[in-house]
Length: 331
Image 1 (cartoon, rainbow, N blue to C red):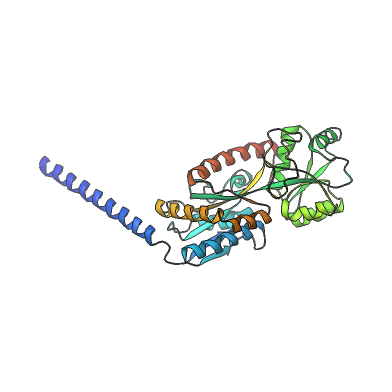
Image 2 (image 1 turned 180 degrees about the vertical axis):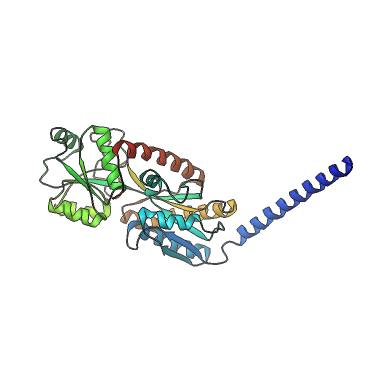
């Protein structure tokens, strides 16, 4: 084929490619403009009744009202949330499958070592919907009322004090390991299969300490069955503002906050991701929704997709270091 003909053919191919790209962009924008035209599946990788499930249902109800399409909660619990998260990662990236992930999305890569999905590359970030600190509490028989007193007391009794958790790799476990690392004390970890059994054992005095969720533990604090010491966030919780933070009461720099974020499968149309972000932001700024989240011990966030992406990468690296130092393993 003559050189001129080859050049002409290349030019035609380039023109056709550009035209096809333009058509695809227009089709994507058209789909985004009409979105949603069918029900949206909202995967929750946790069982019904927990904080993740409650939060997802609050968001789903309002999203359904705003976009005038049904938003269906799909609970897919198991393996620290990895079963439901894997299902979401492998779903069609068309904006009709979302997943609400918890802090464990950043810890399971180091706990499991190998996952069936990449926690960053296989997802499109939409927003961090809410954040919830943990409440450091002690059994009343332990003679401490502050973080400073706890550190001093624990240092004279290495390995004698126990802290319970909802299981190895849970937020309550890793908060305790971070506390050990930052203070140099040795609190012994006792894992349970869920926060309910752990709280029961704490109340019974079988264990002495716990980093617990605010909502399930606060009634026991008010009743005097356990003693509230401090919250794990950098700032005081709006749910219990009278309780100081760990950082302000003896351990500067300590911060552990459970976060709940909305993801979609990677390669979902950017215009749809932007639409979803705007919808969730509008929901989180609704006074009624804010009050409901605070009642669950969580505070609305509403981060941008870019900020959520950057945060996720940082959080994965942060917990990888803590997990390596602590030697945390699966149950």
